[in-house]
Amino acid sequence: MRGNFDSIINTDKPVLVDFYADWCQPCQVQAPIIQNVARELKDKVKVIKIDVDKNPGIAKRYEIQGVPTLALFRKGQMLWRQSGVQNKSQLISIINSHS
Image (cartoon, rainbow, N blue to C red):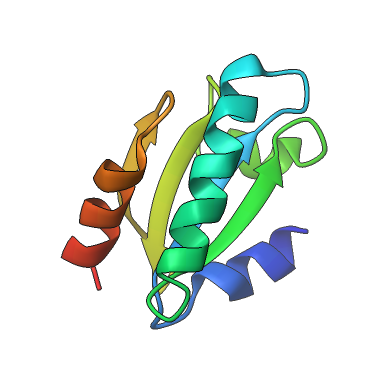
């Protein structure tokens, strides 16, 4: 996934990355919020999910120590990062500020 991940985040359109794990309860709370944001901002942002258990190299590269962790990338650069559940309005505001 690493090569594909790099090509996905290296675009002009912001990419919101949801680092999660299937066993994580807060991640399950975050998932529908992310889906709503993706639907609402579909032209402004690409949203991808990275399972930290299946992609340990990517998780290690970005020092993901807790899930969920959300990160916003553009042109391969991390613009924003936050651990813990984020609400819809916070995410939309962050994405809009980097669009």
